[in-house]
Length: 445
Image: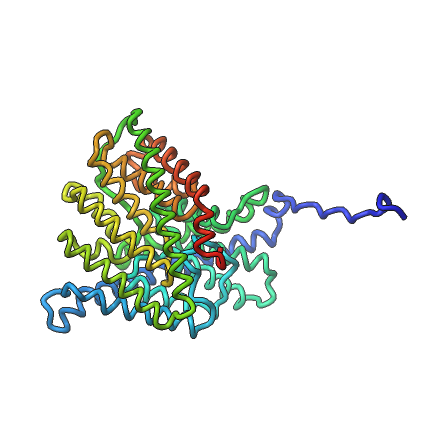
C-alpha cells in the first residue's frame, strides 16, 4: 500500500441551521432560555441594589453611626483594606477562583459551576461595595451563567453539554440586559467576547437575545414595583452636536492614539502587579487596597472634588461627570485621569470585577480634558474617548462603537463617524502594542 492509497474518513457535515431552528428540541431550549431570563434578571437586579446599599452604608451611613459628621478624609483606607482581605480569602479558600482575573481582559469562559457562585458573589460584593475600581458586568455574567447551569441541572441532570452551554449563555444575556443602556450592548459584549460567528450565529444567539429582552422587561417591571431604578447606564441632557468637520477627524486620530497608549500602560501595570500579588495574595491584596485608598485621598485633597469620582466603577459617577462638565478645569480632569487610572490598574491586578465601566469613565474624562483645547466640542470628545478607551481595555471594536452611540443617542448619528475613527485607531495601535502585555505577564497571556 502506498501513501496515495490511504483514505481518511470524510469530515461530518456541519449542522444545518434551518433544521436546528425547526427541531422540537431547539424550541424547548428556546422556551427554557426565555424562562431562565426571569429569575436571572431578578437576581441581577437585586444584586446591583445590594451593591448600591453596601456602598451607601459603608461610605455614608457608617461614618455617621460612628460619630463623624461625614466620612473623614482617611475613611477609604478602612473599607478598601477590608475589601482586599475579603477578596483574597474568597479566592484562596472558596471553590473556583471567585471570578476571572480582570487584568487579563474581558474573557468569556465556559459555563460557570453552581458551586463557584458563592465565591463569585462574595468577592464581587467586597470589590464593588467597598470601593475598588471595577464594574459589575463580569460578576453578573458569571452569576447568570451559574444560575442557568443550576436550573438545567435541577430539571435534568443528564442534559447534553451543548444545551447546558446555550442556557448558561442565555442566563448571562439576561443578567446584563439593562446594564449598558440597551439589551443590544450586552448582547454585542457577550457575542464579541465569545467569538460567536458563522452559520450557527443565529441559532446560538436567539435564546440569548430572547433572554436579554425578557431580562430588560424584568428590570423595568422591578423598577416600577420598587422604585430603585433600572441600574442602566444613561447620560441625559447632553449638548447638541450636528456635523463633524476635518479638525474633529484629526482629533479622533489623536484620541485613538492617546487611549491606546493609556490603556496599554494600565493593562501592563496591572499584569505586572498581578504576578507579584498572586503568590502572596492574603497579605498583598489588602496592601493594594490601601494603595487604591491613597489614590482616592490624594485626588480629593488635590482637586477639592468628591472622592467618589475615583472610588467605585464610575457607573453612577459618569452621568454626573458629563452633566457637570462646566465645573471641571483641565487640570482637575488630568488629575482625575491620573488617580482614577492608577486606582483602576491596581484594582485590575487582584480584585474581582469587570473592566468595562472604569474604561468608559476614563475615556469620558480624557475627552473632556482634551476638549479644553481648540477644535474639539466637549460631547464629541466624550463620545470618542469612551469608544477609544473601551476598545483599548477590552479589544472589542463593535461593542466599543455601540456603547457611546447608545449612551449619547441624541447625537449618535453625527458622532458615529468620529467614534468609529477613534475606535479603529485605538484598536489597531493597541494590537500593535500587545507584545508589551505579553511581556508583562508571560505566564498568563
